[in-house]
Length: 326
Image 1 (cartoon, rainbow, N blue to C red):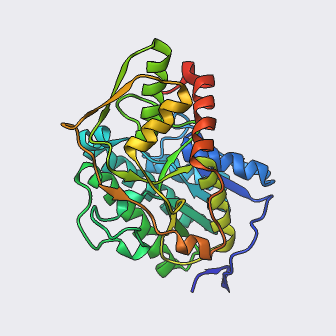
Image 2: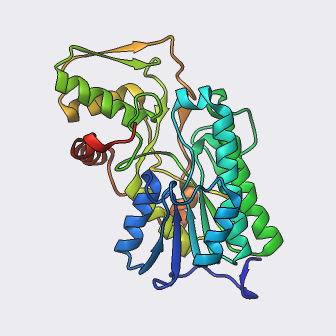
């Protein structure tokens, strides 16, 4: 049983006047959650940039929580990157993410945060998990080697939430999003995920009038993509409608090949050249489609189509290209 002040907890509409801390509020997911909360009438949102508060620094995190006393927390802060970054710097992804998660959740528990949402990643599941991937596939097989360190950190976060529920009875929950994209993403050529990397690559090629673009791998892996604004909407929905120890998959329930997503992006940005595929580079997991039946049972389904989402994201990218990180 989870409880708040000794009373059995039942999910309900959150108090719009309560202090709500969004960890990672400048990032892809955190900024989307912030926008959704503002639109939903939350009056007391709290956020700190990494330069204002380094979440890897335990004492600073505890001081921040003691000073702000948030009632709700969305833990969207993380060190993230694509295949190259994950496989090149596994220690960074393991160490930084475990410290961020542990510090935030330990401090949140100390001050009695009522409702905390931990956001992980679909990479927590085994490389060859049956498709679509159910929540109970967790820890049933080997991870994808190119991002196993990051995945282990996120698995630790899920267990941390479950442990808090068992030991302290707090109604904290976890959500595992599929591949996300949208405003405030990382568009670095070396550190980004596949969709933002493709947007930058094709848009630059279109602007330069290049005849060819080269992408990593074979183009055959299948991926599911969810717009960050949909993820933010699902996050608030789960906080107000779901309570349970199991992580909840968040996605669209449909996937597409990397080759097809590349063709879609090329069309949206106006690239008319040819695409080559460097098959010496890794593909990663062959397919990663989430079973979203638990999310649907909780009353939520995605609303933004992939083409609409890409068009919106390309427009945002072009409007902010001069100030992008990376």
